[in-house]
Amino acid sequence: MNTLTFEFTEYNQQNFDKVMEALKSFTFIKLIQSDTNTSNTTVISYDEMCKKYPNEWLLLGNPKSDSGKLISGIVLFHHADKRKLALANQNGTLTSHYKLATHVYTGTLAKNSNIGILKQQTNEKV
Image 1 (cartoon, rainbow, N blue to C red):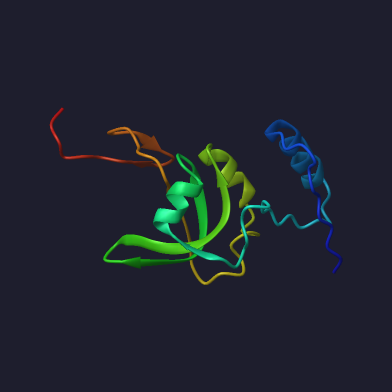
Image 2 (cartoon, rainbow, N blue to C red):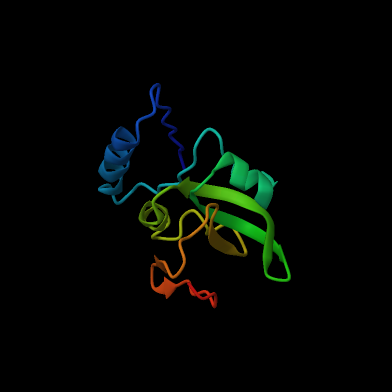
């Protein structure tokens, strides 16, 4: 297998999205997406994730948790728009090398906000 890496001299999300859409049209290309700030093998703590990727959705490989609280993981992809995160891994290409994967939001969700097919609920009276 040959690997081809693209490096954008000026990063622009719109241009990046155009290139990704064009590459998806080729059936013989397997897309593995990362950025220069994310290593696919570096485990970082949840606190580091929040500092490095504020108010973003993160796709994590091999997440570690304690009593349901996320402790650390490998950031595979990040984006402010959850739909972009879902599209990036729609075929499971980003998570296929990991025993466990999950996604997390590093910001604060509004009370009773819709998050995909799930709905976050709180028991607090407004």
